[in-house]
Length: 156
Image (cartoon, rainbow, N blue to C red):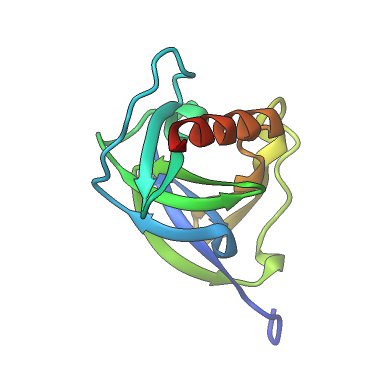
C-alpha cells in the first residue's frame, strides 16, 4: 500500500457498530437542531429542520438501516445526495479516517436485499470492522424525490 493515495472517510457509530462514508458528500455536522415533525411519514423520517434558511429533511439513519440506537438524540450529519441536502441522524461521530481505497474489501456475498445497494465495502483495521456506506444509495431515488418535494412544499 506504500505510495497509494489515501482518501478520507467520516466514521460514525450506529448501534455500537462503526460505519464510514466518503467525506466528500458530508457538508457539515450539527447537534441540537429543532425538528418539525411530519404526520403520517415513514418511521425513519423525523421531520424537517432549518439549515440556515433552507428547509431540509431529517432522516434517522439508525431507523432507516434498522439498527437499534445506543443513545437518544444523536448527531446530525448533513449530506448532499443527488438533488437534495438531507440531515442523517447517527449515534455519534467517531473520527475522520484516511485509508487507501485498497483497504476496503467488497461487501460480503451474504449481504443481500436492500442492503446490497448501499453497503460499498468493509475494512478490517486490526480487528476493528468498519462498514463503508454509499450514502447516496441509502435512500432510493423515489424516496429522495419525495423528500425534495416535501422540503419544497414547506419552504413555500
